[in-house]
Image (cartoon, rainbow, N blue to C red; front, side, top):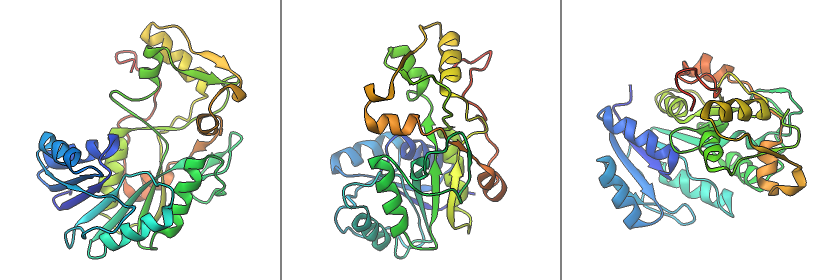
Length: 271
């Protein structure tokens, strides 16, 4: 399904996981980072090609007919960066943009599908929305919930003792495992679907309930509850938005079958 040329812009946590899978499947993969040395080093580790790309300035185009996936977060001028992205992908077969569910308004516990009101509270959410609005109509936008996986997420922070629960812990937080997000990216890149698609698991659990369950499974102390005004506004805006992200379009139209339908601890695998 994925035997094409893939051009992965911003090969951080998700982009690296995507590239690793595509290389294993035999695709030609080009990973990019802003710093040339970092791009070369990462490409060597993954067994693919590397290139320096900085979306704040114009750059040479991606190979004709390739699938361009942008995992890079927007900077201070999202519209200008997207203009450079679109120019880079001018002869590409497909453009996949990985965005965030942070573009939505506060949910107050509601189920949030792709038609939900767009009114981000955080600075990062506002940049994401500005970037989305600058994309061409034929792009597909994957709005990812909180991404977790090996070395990243709630379990890691609980182990480190740095996780805090905002308020009483009843607010819902949606997540997606990096493997499931990679699956959605691959399917989006090889489909003709356009527009926004939520990428989340099936279980937007109340954050306090989930954190306590994971802490118990790990055998570490439960996270402390703290008032919202004691937390960085950007973090508070993400963790206290109380949105239950609906993933119906991802399942129906991309055909994603979740390997990790919940972030709750598995009896035999607590992380």
